[in-house]
Length: 261
Image (tube, rainbow, N blue to C red; front, side, top):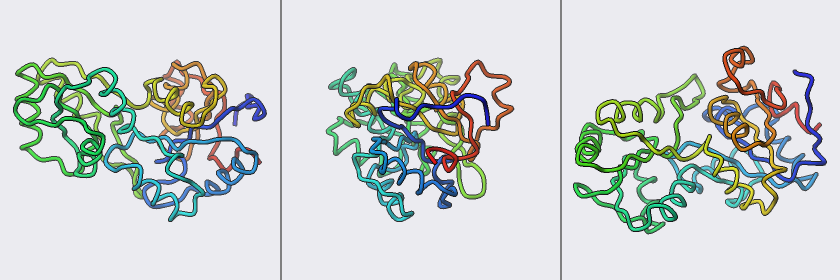
């Protein structure tokens, strides 16, 4: 849909967004499974990359395999995985007050992240479909006492079969405005995700490409990391949205079905 193309012989690996790129909610986007099969046939490594921190990697693996995608757990990288790596590297030993789903909290515990309530050093905000007033107020009280605010990703909306649900972004702004504490946001568009995905695929990050449906996360991350990108129009972004953006994807296609034919 634009004049630029990608030389697939120069691609070392592929990062693929999930929601809006290979499925929306529980609906598979046409041709997505065939695209993954084409990657496997051409022996191009790939990683499914998601900002959705409401579930763990095992959940996404089960969802993808039930939909007919040929994937393994090594092919999945979530913003929770990236956040845990960040905490261990940059905030090692700091206690965390999690605002997230039970699966999110369980993943933190499994990774030996120290959790606390009224004495936590960090308020960790994830996409929480189980959020309550008690969680919101608990986070607020800690932030007012001097706790740091960390968020797994910046997405405003989460794709569903019928449209979109409210995601983490509005809650980040809520806490920032109420407490004047600026959030540290992990996940896309942080270029750290590119480095982690390349390490997962055991390839050079320079040759990796990003495929996704969001300008402010998927395409922004690719631009900031200096790698090539493919914007699909099967999810959130519309081609005209680029008119008000400084980002220029390498390619724009209707869906992943248009790639690697």
